[in-house]
Length: 601
Image 1 (cartoon, helix red, strand yellow):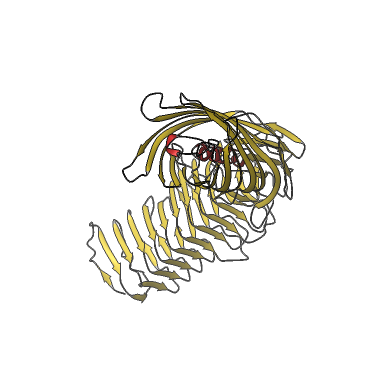
Image 2 (image 1 turned 120 degrees about the horizontal axis):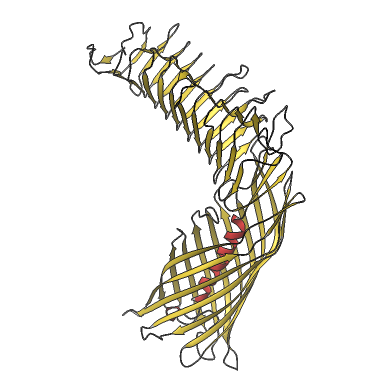
């Protein structure tokens, strides 16, 4: 074993393992205020004794290599001490990989792999535990009941446990991935994956919290998968608990309340839609805490939709697809506003490109919608062709066809494709005041994927539906009224979506028909460049108001509340010959790029 550093009692020491070694660390050289570093490519491998044993307070262990033993691999000793462990390499044991006892405070961060036959991380009687995982922690025992993180507090006032997982926690058997007991405060934040391979015969939760005086705070935007079925989340004799399911959250397995639960509050963020089962092997379930009436939790909050309770199932219906469809049709209208004879003058595609002339146009657009409280991340694309001209009465017109696709990024989300027809008429008088009326009807095929906690393997179920959506949109335009070469546009649109029925394996979610009202004001200024190109720029402020919609799940009905949102956009466009391109950026973080190629004949 190669060590750098010399131990001086009473001083902080640094030790570095730079090569391979097999030792029995009976000397306890890490004895307080010390740092032990195992370099990349180095190792400490033992048989019959722990690989690393420490005494004293405030020790730090940093592993970039291999630490392995057939007994406990890392074994801090002492009472009321603080130990910090950072693993970038591998810690492996046929017993416990990390075993901390005796009232110790623990801070563990893992970027590598921690594996064990019993407990990968075993903490007992601790006042404070912090575990952060960005790598892999697993129990590879397939027969014995062992937790991956077995964290026990000292039941003292102010005791706390915090687990942050952005990696993978895997239990090869039937016990918990995260087990927390006898802490005042408990918090779990999961954006990674928790899995259990085995099929339990009791109510063991994949996350289990026992005797937490102040309850559990859980934020989940990752996967919690009881692959063999059973209970995903178990609360046992806890205080108030707050459970947050964010965009990206997927749960497989039920939620089980065991014993006295003071309160349970469930919060569902935008993009979360699913069927959540409550109860365990010996429970009749019901969406309730013990002592409450069936059907009642302390609170259920759905940020972007509604919930429907059906016995021991809590059905959450998110409206992201509905709102994203509205947003995509608004984007189509925004592109059509500038499709006419000089886009720099703010003309619409319902205005002809030349007096008594005809024109043909091909257009396309892409939008990248960032998550908001009304829809989660999605991408939208559309293409189309138009032909227009001027009638004998001086009325401008256009007819066209379009195709579109919008798709969300998360597993629980949507994918919607469609095609349709668009049309419009317009007229502008000699004073520069114009009006237009645009129409559009789309046939949509939409697939929605929800989180169904009864699906053991993935927690996901999908269904699709065909339906119609359309708009009618009048607008007024004022050209150069401020003598600034500007165009000011005022637009209203009624956007209608027909009713929809999504038949999932275990449930049917039905949406009633809906109407959204869109109003906007836009200011555009055009400048002709020396090379004949036209640069236009401006801004748009728009507001969407959604009417209430009936949601029906398995015979139970709930009504969404009407909601509104306001969005501002900055835009810049460039016309080169017959081709115009435009870039828009919204206050909601949405970016849209469009083009329009036009030819007169």
